[in-house]
Image (cartoon, rainbow over all chains, first blue to last red; front, side):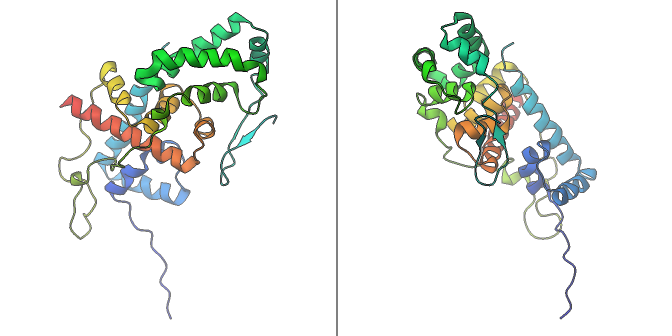
Length: 66
Length: 195
């Protein structure tokens, strides 16, 4: 029997957005991180979603009283 | 590490309970200044977590600190002990959500079969967000109890994931999932408010 090398499934936008917190926390496994980075290279909407996730964290952080 | 508490079976994260000995000693000696510093550091977050019952449970918690500090034995951090005293009085702050919505609504992504399945629909990407502090505060306060607690601790008060897991007895993965859902709901509320 010939075994074909397993190809990593490409990341799609719907899956990527579920990993935004892990991505920003640096908690994605290396292999997944590489696939996510490759996706972001060519997807403006997901790149915007990542930036927006950072914005949400920043805006919520501003609620902390001085 | 003195008093280190390991979190979960699958986590190497620890919380150091040995860093606040001087403060605890001062509190145990009835040092009002030390109590004041502790209040200044945590009262606002405690009030946000307690929500509508803050006026009742936050003063109650501070009385419990004064009553209980003599018996504090550094089994956990002072901060964790303080917030446990609070959350024991606010069961709604520990209530899980009834739903687990996707981060972005499913309809924003293409369905069907083929290579474009799961990609954004045209024009359905992230919209603009409202940034007004009162809108952000309302979005946070509207979160389901446990998600709100995790988000307030992590993103408002700057707790580390390990501290949050320790306080709430959550696994690292569960804590991150709750934080993610909370951020997603806030993001959606801010997008809705910007329309």
